[in-house]
Amino acid sequence: MTTSFAHIAWRPLLGAALALSLAGVGRADTIATSATSPAVSPELVSGERTRVAELAGIRSATSTPAQPSRYGWPVKPFRRQHPVRGFFGDPRISNHERTKQFHFGVDISAPNDTPVYATLTGRITISTRHPHTVYVVGRDGSEHSYWHVIPSVRSGERAVAYRTVLGRIEAPYAHVHFSEARHGQYLNPLRPGAMGPFVDDTTPWVARLTAESGDRLLQSSGLRGPFDLVAEVGDETPLAIPRPWHDLPVTPAVLRWRLVSRSVAVPGWRTAADFRRTIPSASAFGSVWAAGTTQNHVRAPGHYRVVLGRGFDLRAGRYVVEVAVRDTRGNHSTSRFPLVVRGA
Image (cartoon, rainbow, N blue to C red; front, side):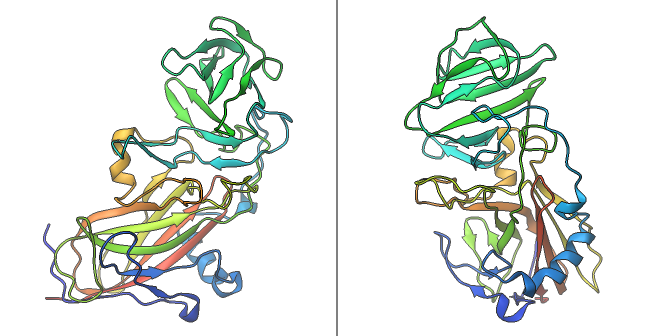
């Protein structure tokens, strides 16, 4: 597709609550408009965010009825919520960026050497490829797996939920990676009705929106040719994570967006990422996570950049890009980014 623009202007809708940022995000020139974030007073933006969220079909947390959990936590106490430092769908990048995949479970923080218990009754298998990974498969085909565990069981043995100690957390990981799968498909353990109890009253956010071309972030003036839109998002953990993994972001469960224009017909709401139940295959990583995405490291917060679309070819006019994010418990926020496209 071909796009020709003389100018794109980005202006904050909420005055002093929003600010224009020209930070480079590790690359060259950038146009990036800051949006509502945890630092912004809720009183400044709550009305607009609620209205737009209703248009997106995103309900508040109080409208999502509580569901009994199907199973408890793999560390004691089983029926008390534990800190989770890695969420389902988080970007996982390794092997000098040659291996990229979606996080297929959750990382439950606990001290090294903590006993890890089965959360499912079934047959035990120790991975031959990853000897510190234990699988338990139930009669209905459900599979729970526990990673970074020094096993105290053997393949072929039977596990009893909340009675069998599968092993202890391996140093230096200070967490057990827990996954749930059914019929070969990974499921989000934090979805309603799965692992619990789990309460989340935090609010995910959209930090900013960027226009990009290839590996370049574009300046606000003189934009020409097709461009991509990328939303930078995040969420915080419901419970504080022990140091040194404290204060690092996690991924919202779902991101939707749309273009709004009074003069130009544009499509309705579209889903850019949805990890509420499952994840895409690793081959789809680049269609969800944009270049420049990084995962969390100690004292180095991850940078979560979601692709809204590529090769935009818009008619001249005034637009608003609305981006809505939500977690598995219905907490949500919506940010609005004005966009002016002028003809060549």
